[in-house]
Image 1: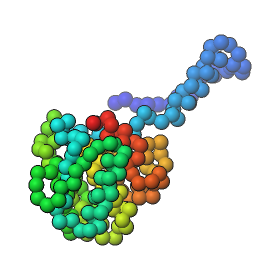
Image 2: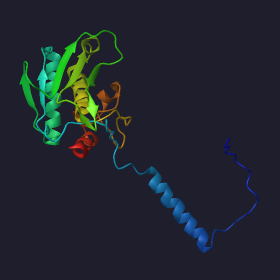
Image 3: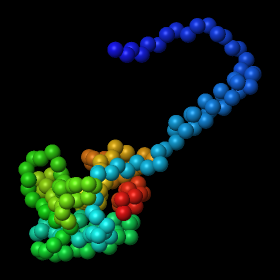
Amino acid sequence: MTTATEHRPQSHRRDNPTTAVDRLLVVLLGLAAIFAIAPAASGYVLQGCKFASSVTPSVVYEENSLTTDVASAVSAAQGQWDVHTGSTTYFVAGSGDANIEINDGDYGNTAWVAQWSYGCSGGYYTSDEGNMNFNLYHTWSYDSYELQVVATHEFGHAYGLGHNSDGCGSWWQNVMQAGPDKFTCSGGAPPWTDDVNGWDYLY
């Protein structure tokens, strides 16, 4: 068993830190304090799976008889991803071969508001298609902006970003934080800088 114990130090008193060693120690402690409060290089978290390069940047998504509110949120969210990443994501109506199949429905009182489901192998989706589902049981009370933020979050998952704990106003504010706190973040509609940095890293 390893035990960390704090011992009372022996008395080695230094009244005047005037030696070169003392001055060097003061400088090093100051530098350590500066680096301790500096932000990390990034905050985004990777999910561990993404679309193959043969798929991006033209990821195709298909809406399967969505309610008007969810369809509008999906369109606005993907439009924001396109603006910020330069990707071209085509909207395909009705049935067909799409990379992202989007559905909504009343799935009951689940623990999730929306979800992205997929198969993964070797860091890439095992098929060219994943499913994005919105649970109307929860989303009926969301306003249009909140629903757009949820859709933006789910597209982040689809592109390969995982959940992140960095909240509003942090160094690395991002839409991938779980829960409703992201609805009140400033900075305009997401995705935000750190989300885009994650997308750039992946693609």
